[in-house]
Length: 398
Ligand code: LLP
View 1 (cartoon, helix red, strand yellow):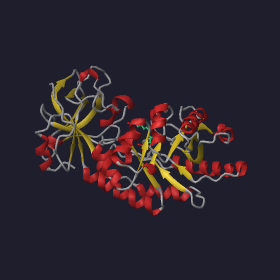
View 2 (cartoon, rainbow, N blue to C red; view 1 turned 60 degrees about the horizontal axis):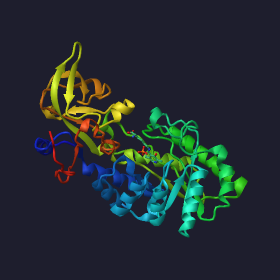
View 3 (cartoon, rainbow, N blue to C red; view 1 turned 120 degrees about the vertical axis):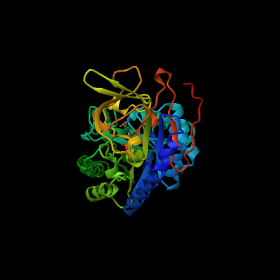
View 4 (cartoon, rainbow, N blue to C red; view 1 turned 180 degrees about the horizontal axis):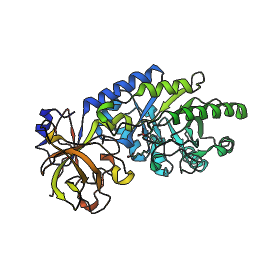
């Protein structure tokens, strides 16, 4: 990922910055396309993971759709040129103007989370004399076996329609003339590293589909299983391209699919996670009473995942990549005035000095997109392997 040519060029770039390996993105997309097409599955890339123009253009050029969770994401997808017929709009709190924008752009459909929301969509669509497609996001009450903040399909989570309300929602929808029920939608969580929760999800969907047919004589055209496939944060180099084969083979094995039914996915992290690294310069090596701290010029404002979820990203001293060095243990921290501004505790690194460059790996998903300007910090730049040109050029105050 970091050959000597690239490392050489890094020394001229203002740190911290995000470095994106565009070859890796292409490989990941190629594999995703190959395996999803084998089963005729439709993939909508989840913009929330990384919505840089370069990323979105590359994803769009491979023919994938877009999964959006805000009006601005829908707008972005339209502007980038995603086929409107492949844009889905999800989210527990869509505002009227966001709904209107999506209706005006004739997107494929809305993933809806309550009857209250569907009634508003119906009202807004009727004012425009349009009929819009709706899928019901159901809460299957399945434990995704991931971080608490990243689990979404448990009955105590705010997401989705509880299964016990399904009959009632279908009954009420019969009176709504400007919405058409076309499918079911699920998303049980993110950074899911075991396929077991997906097997449970398939079983649940099979059961729901049978009941829908028995109770309402309904066979729906679309089933959307959401996203969530995790990546290897501990050893990214062992799994640079995700194992889509096992994922889709498992779904194919356990999910009962009706004739002409279309199966959709909304993958984000697995597509873009490994292509990105946050590159930061070491400002100081500070001696604590018992520990040594590596103080970086990147902080939680540049990558919030460790502070927010306690997540661990692999860190490498890329300045020492080809130099035999002693291995030392450090707490790697940022400059932000918060105790949680810590990237790693007691991490083993090649002996590190002021001025060294560190790469915080697996930061392509939910990295740059979650940047904040807290402490009035600058936003990190985005640098693409195939251009090595500074994007988002901005005036650097300090
Ligand atoms: N579909 C829905 C409805 C979602 O809520 C999400 C992610 C996805 C698809 C894409 O999931 P993925 O394939 O990326 O796991 N900021 C957190 C992750 C939040 C995920 C939110 N929803 C993190 O940094 O880990």
